[in-house]
Each structure stands twice: as structure tokens, then as C-alpha cells.
Length: 222
Image (cartoon, rainbow, N blue to C red; front, side, top):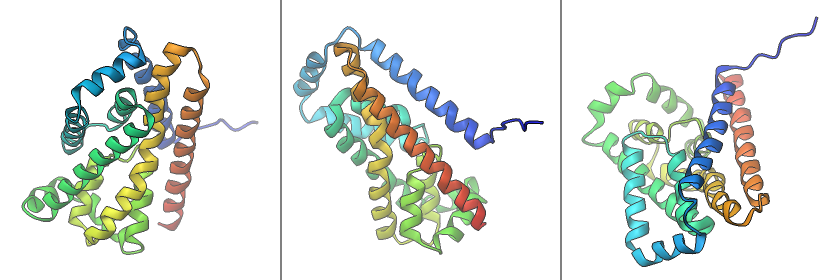
């Protein structure tokens, strides 16, 4: 008899995340269907520096409120295009990460210790094996809540320098596929060229595969 193919909870969650990203991209592109890319860029340029500053502020608030970061990453590509979208999204994510880290390590420590009891102790044990690399790798896992990692890391023994470097190195490649999905989605709507969008979705799939491998490796070590 053939064995049934069973999906773990984590694998099912990643599949649902991929479907959610596709649906969110379609809805975002649909909502902006009345705009041509040139018109959208004109609106962004008209807003000047306030457009990226406003986006960074909203990204920071959303991350500190523990909201999912995927919609914000896709929005960065829709609003600013691929390269500026990656820059502003990464800046917003890193700034929010630093604020949450210092909050947990200073005035907010008693509160966060109660809310994250059990989680941050596990992270601290793994950080002792390689703080900077661990922080870099965990940023590449899309289903790992970005905001929770920020607050939990502040409770651990990791140095801020390692936390910051690992966060920067891991944040840029982790937001890149989703920003490209947003930027290529609106281009596909106006030009009909689906290849950039398919490429962005391919990168998203590669990121999910790496997440699967890394989590499996962590379980084996545990």
C-alpha cells in the first residue's frame, strides 16, 4: 500500500502563506488598477521625502504592534518599485527591530518576560551556539513573526551589535522576494508581462524551501 502524503502543521502554514501572498498581491494590484505605474510614481514623487518617511513610520508601528509584515513588504514594492522598495522596507524593519530590542532590554523587560515566557528562554539557549548567525538565519523564516523575534531577542544575552548585524543581513534577503512580488505585480497588470512576477514568486518559494531546511536542521540538533 502506498503511504499517504501527510503535511506537517508548519508545511501547511507555509502553503497557506504562499496562497495568502498571491491573493494579497492580486487584491493590491486590483485596487490600484485605475493607476498606471507612471501615475503612481508621480504621486510618490509629489509627496517627496514624506512618502518614504510615512511608510517607514507605518512599518515600524505595524511591526511593534506584532502585525504580519508580509503585506507591508508587498506594499513597499507597489509604492516604491523594486530597489527603493527594498531599501525603505529594510530601513523600516531594522528601525522597528532596534526599538523593540531596547524596549525589552530596558523599561519593558518585566512585561515582555511575562508575555514571552518560554519563548525567549529557548531563543537564548540557541543564541549561545551562535548569536549573529542564529539571528541572521531566523530572519529568513517567513512564518517566524518578525515583531516577536525583536522583543524576545531583547530578553536574551545576545549583544546588540550581533543582533543588529544579523538582523540587517537577514532582513534584506527576506523582504526582497515580497517587495519584488509587489513591484512586478503592478507591472504585470499594465504590460501583461508575467515573467518578472513569476521570478519573484520563484524567489519566494526558494525562501520557503530554505525555511523548511533550517527548521528541520534545528529539530535534528534539538
